[in-house]
Image 1 (tube, rainbow, N blue to C red):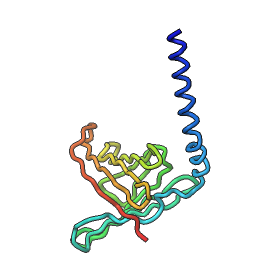
Image 2: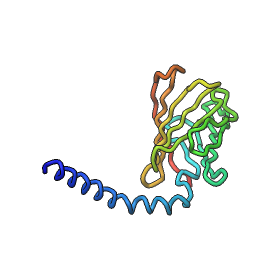
Image 3: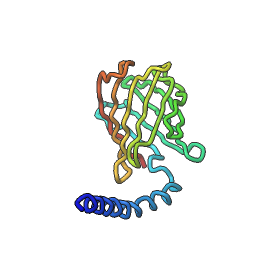
Image 4: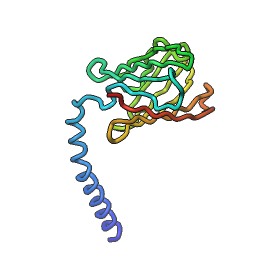
Amino acid sequence: MRNSSLLRSTLLVLASATLAAAPAALSQGSASHAPNPRFGRWKLKSDAPAPASNIMTYSPHGTTGMRVQIESVNAKGETARWGYVTEFDGRDMPVTGNAGQTHASVRVLDDAVNEIINSKDGVVTTRLTNVLSPDHNTIAVVYMRDDGKGRTMGVSFATYERMP
């Protein structure tokens, strides 16, 4: 008797959770046709003196992907431009314009979080966790530098703010 009571309670909890999640799942289905909230230009929030800057531009690529373009200016005023495209499927995609990186792979962990793995010639160099704020105006990034053998050698953080 106790087992059937426990089974009924478990089923009731699962059914309640399923019903509670249904509206969110339905809204995600219709929201999948909405533009990616990451699309736009993002500027690194930094205390570095001018001319140093870093701007990420996320734009549509194909029907479901995204083009990522980075433009940075160092303290000497030297500009670097590099980028790649992604379909958010975790596949390595070629990176152009960055001598320290040959490929990037991006996969979606949830609506707000993407995981990005950068590599050079097949060896992982950095793992990034890219988190979009609930108001879609800030991206926080955790950079984990890899030693090429799967060990994290350092961690840094960055905040990007949406540009008008």
